Length: 409
Ligand code: NAD
Image (cartoon, rainbow, N blue to C red; front, side):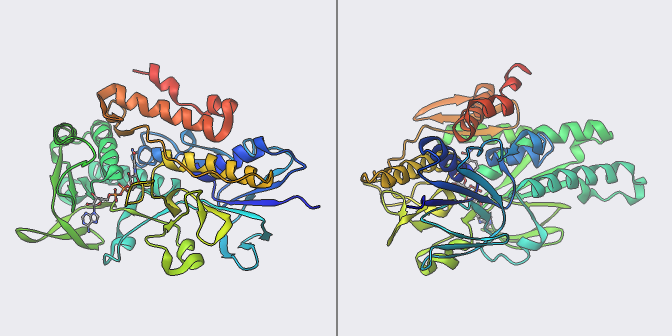
């Protein structure tokens, strides 16, 4: 008999966890594992906002897949996934076609612009390393251009940053801006009072998952960094140098040379192409064992999956935390199936949420207990290292840890 072929699409938190677990739990005689990703590396996307302000480097938050997926029966294929043919159990990629017995779809997110005119073309989005590096370069270029221009030629918009959205991505990004702007002002001899940082958000309440008091403390901290907030404000258009939005007082336009959109995310567009209208915002409601409805050999994880916990009526929010747990669970269910045992239902264990605010502040909810300030931020680095351990093993986790930053007060 031939060995079953397990194909995993995407080397994010979910896909890499699944690949790592499968190569450990299955012997080379039991299965072949192919992990497909357009990049040959994994990115700790929970830290992309740090790269976006130049407060971390790309190499700090990413690592090669080959040393992680290195068992004789596992391989990494660096290729773009083009389409999934469920009928013939085939994945078409830019490099080769892969016939699968088990498929794990963990293709992650893309930023969602909800069709807002001009948004995709004119605003930066926190999506990948290249985009994040581009944001950091762009902001520094603007500050440098301002500083070196003749007084008469200076463009105040070079010192203006506009952020659309105040979810976790927007908030953590603003925290990094709060750290970075004083450094840039010092470096280029710019008076910080000339810098304008504004956040426009459709939300009514800031950080609704925290108590109003805690959310207010976060906002107060960001305001103390020179950031202004415009809540209950719906952006409907982006131009090359502005956001246009409506609030209860009417229409407004804010101008800036740096526009960043953090208005939300969708699962991979391949989800809709593969599963059709059942997919909403790139997410498919999965069975309790994480398989796709109607396909007991296809697992869908992370940002591509909508998992509804027992007794709840809405899907769990998409986070690295749930994706990691799903990766392990899908791998375990595949192993069970290969060993002819029944699959288990997935149970999501919520451990808490950390919102970093630059390198020195943050807010964490640990199942009802709140941790604030410096400790919360350090907690985030700790979680990052634990996650590295889960997706890539102890050796790689130690090699890549930024935990030593703990001592870098
Ligand atoms: P989100 O959907 O949570 O937030 C989107 C924000 O954009 C909201 O503030 C919303 O009001 C605003 N918005 C949307 N349309 C708008 C419009 N037209 N005009 C103005 N504002 C508009 O998106 P996110 O912050 O990217 O988060 C995505 C997912 O990733 C979430 O599930 C989140 O929990 C998770 N995440 C978690 C962490 C963490 O745990 N630290 C960090 C980042 C992201």
